[in-house]
Length: 458
Image (cartoon, rainbow, N blue to C red; front, side, top):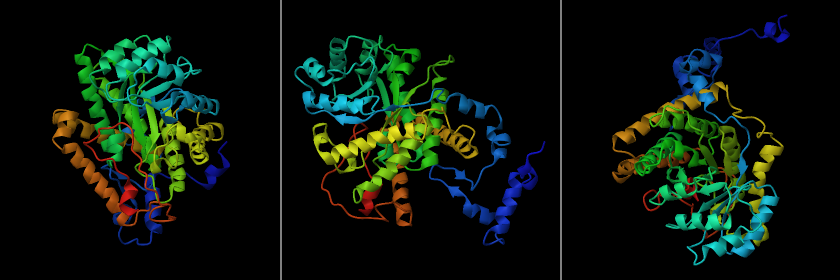
């Protein structure tokens, strides 16, 4: 039996849609030029068409096994860890706040530790009292040179299989802490992040390519120390900033998984366990002038992160750009409100949107699958260009990476000057002056600028 609506709306291929678009456009004399006007020439280096149909998957470059390859490497299990971040000041009082945070919906924690303590064992014992690291993943941002001391202290304070890890750039201590925690496979000691590139103004293509190049340098260093790719991959976290371009950011995280498989195939032909991806909402697009509008950005970014397939998600509070709160500050009602709202975004996406019930919900979308493929190829090309220059460190030292990021940033600024809207900055603005400044954790400090797009207009 033929469905009723099939007789009313017969099938139409993409060429029929194009004919209809051109016939109904304001100017039919321009032919393909009118269609070109509707296309989006992205800063990522490729063109996005006004619409996509099933033919883009059935007849285009994705028609082969490539589409199956893209989908096969995405997350197989739905859900993510709701992972708020705190900066530790006073271990005893902070412990109360951490336990309360976990009781109110957090699944994991990120803790930025204070300067190296005289007795780290005692401090960690007070800080983690009542928090079992074999059940609750805790990720640490230790101070420089503190990683080995921290891991050894954790072995005493929490003598069981740990969950969580270290969110620090690869350095001379990484190989040793990886070996020290070999009996805790879910405690990840290798971290490569995209935040420095993102906050310098990177396009999605640049963010993916430079993150991959940074990972290549890290793996070269670690394999030279005697570790194998089979030891490295399960202990690696990719920490990625997620911006406001909703569909592009979904595709960015999906493309990252494809790129990682392509990258690791150079080390081993055997399949490796999937990489752990931590997503965090962006501060690059946040506004100080009207910080409440950052709630809109954070919600969009968080939804893109989970649909894109992050394993853990950190949502920055809407007022974080005014000054990153400490745990002690969270006792104040205003900061407690913003921290609660940030934590609840993940909870709402789970309990009201049911996004934790489906793995890779965007699979099969004509638009997102095409966008994912375009990002993979553009980022891989740029990554190979960096490798041809001798790798990430050399490309950074030569000024190539900073030059590319500067061009991308200035293009973003110019787009706003030409009329692109920044909600709470160029429209719907209600100034709320503040003298505080947010400083993003981690990154390649002193080399790449830490920016906010709105700064030019506030």
